[in-house]
Image (cartoon, rainbow over all chains, first blue to last red; front, side, top):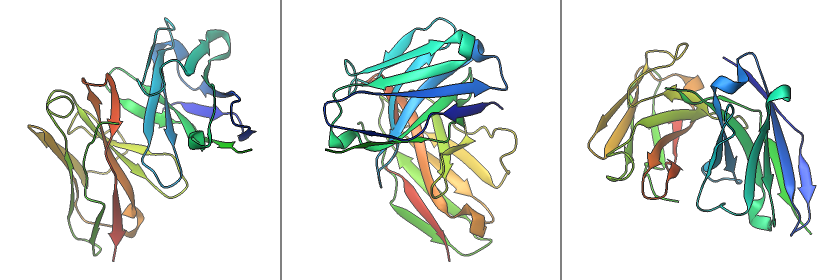
Length: 118
Length: 110
């Protein structure tokens, strides 16, 4: 099935950047893509972007284009999501979620709470 | 984000059948697969249905999905107390080139 382990909670000031990591285990890392999904308190989840873990090709939600970067380190089986120019509206739980050929978001990380506050 | 519209709530007694609808458009449900997720309080969503009507291994057959034109449905047959959760539909939307989540349905077991 695959296990995804995310980095810990973060508190950031407005205008700062945050980088969240997602370490994969239990499957061949490069054979699955990885998505990032965030969920603000009381809101529905929101898709941010995706990376092909093998080729490093990416695609981003239009909403976050220019402000987010998703990258991967195959030697560490880890995917990273960096979000810049944070505002209070970026306060949310950020999830990584695996994508296969047929299955979408079939494994999820435990979530990382990012709080943006002055 | 583009809108996939779900009823905000649904409920039933144990053993009853509950249906959750997801209404979209030609740019999302009408031309792409639909996926369904269950989210228990404080947890990450979990995949229930993929490619409109397929169940991943380990998901009980009490959960079933269907799609017609620009709408999709999730049916929970034989409702149980552990099915109390939020349910979301998801589809790729060609107009925004991204995945969109439904507005979510909170299921309550009476």
